[in-house]
Each structure stands twice: as C-alpha cells, then as structure tokens.
Image (cartoon, rainbow, N blue to C red; front, side, top):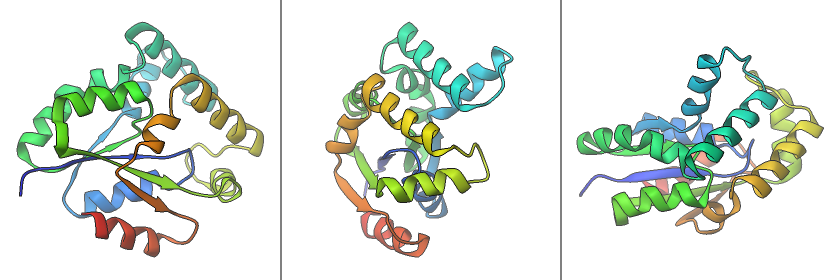
Length: 178
C-alpha cells in the first residue's frame, strides 16, 4: 500500500490535536501548519496569545494568499511523504486544501472532527496551553469561518468523526480510518 497523507480539520477545541496524536502513535509523521505562525511570532518577538496568533495568521495570508501555511510547509510534507505516512495538523483554508490535493492527489484525505460547540468551548476554557474564555472561543470561531475559509475543508471531508465523548472513542474512530 502506498503512503498516505491525512489532514485533520475541525473547529478549535474539537479534538484535532488528540486525533493527530493518535496518527503519530500509529507511525505517521506530523506536520503542524500552526508552526508557521509560531515561528513568525518568534521572529517578530511577539507574545504567543490568541490576538497575536490571529494577527500573524491573517498577515501571512494577506502576504502569501489563503494557501500560505500549505505553501510554506509543502517542502516538509514532500520530504516526509517520501519516507512514509504523514498527518497534517491545522489545515484550515480551502486554498490550503487545494495546494495539498493538487500536489498529492488521491494519497491525500481529509478527516473532519466535529464537536458540539458547548463542549468545545468548555474544553478551550480548561486546556493547559492557550486557554480561551467563552468570548474568545466564539470570536475565534467567527474569525476562522469569515476570514480563513475554514468551513470548506470541514464540509468536503473524506471522513467525519463526531467527538462529543472521550479520547478512547475518538481513537477507535481514527483507528477505523487508518
């Protein structure tokens, strides 16, 4: 069987990072599109917080287009794909999807993680890294839908996992895919 590339998509707090962890446990190499933003924050000497991340994300997309994270990560994806299976974390925009799909064709699949909004916001308020208030969570949702084409890849997924339960059930659903 030839190598695969899965991108895990979903709204903030849906469980994407946990899903990606499962892929990594199963031997997949991880490419984190958010690393592009974090690297840019560091280069600008900006604090890592929700507002700065949003500003940098939107700046990069203005400068490089809506496919910025994919374009800036494509060489890394190519290199890892030559060696084995790859999972992409934080693919957001339809334009990013098209860049990866055009490069890798049928080897590339989308896995959407859907979680009830109330559950997501509760998770976001209690997470250890970059916790968000209810208002920040809602603001981020709206920004991602309106500004970065996030809905397209979620709607166009090859696999849909509802993650309103625990990690064990999420892992079982991922294992069915891989």
